[in-house]
Length: 131
Length: 99
Image 1 (spheres, helix red, strand yellow):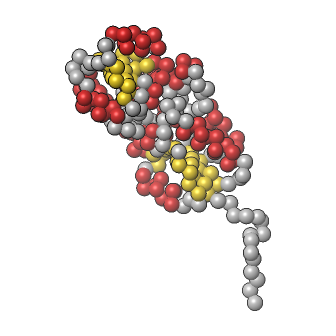
Image 2 (cartoon, rainbow over the protein chains, first blue to last red):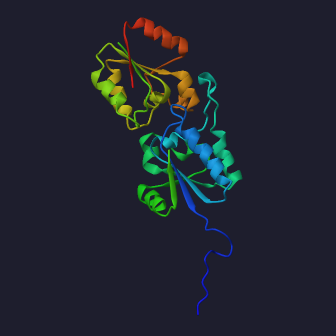
Image 3 (cartoon, rainbow over the protein chains, first blue to last red):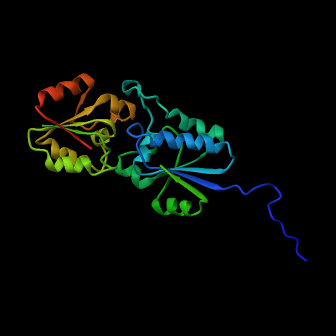
């Protein structure tokens, strides 16, 4: 007779969460909302990845000085993510190239992926939230 | 005519439609996410340079500063502040704020 387990002995399964960021910061609220959801999700100890593609790559550009537009600069929060064990940040190579950006323009270390690699990573996820 | 574009050129076709419609002697003011069209090295650079032959292109500096891209300003684009924005609307009889 085989022993059957109804739940893993160590607790519920950790899920892979991916946050897809495709909007530039400040012009719309999506970039900030996404970051706030990530920070909340981080408290649940899941396997979190952030991907930045299309205009989302602009969210990580360094040197954001927002005083003139009267909005709080939230870009330092991307640097604080590793303190929440959110360390997997990926950018789409084609989106960077299309916008004339390189890794040197960004305020955090990222892994640059091509579309095939990013697509494969997406396909592995349990939950995808798109902003 | 002063054409005001506030959307990223990569997010919508707004700027492209504006460029097709804007007549020689008119001006385009890029604000909010629209300022990304004023950055050098993007896939749009040639299109913007072409437009600059007959249209004056401006970008709102506080919006470029906020996004950290002021150092990448495309040559030939004039930066304005909010006061300059107001001056432009007075200079051109009519404005079209594209959505």
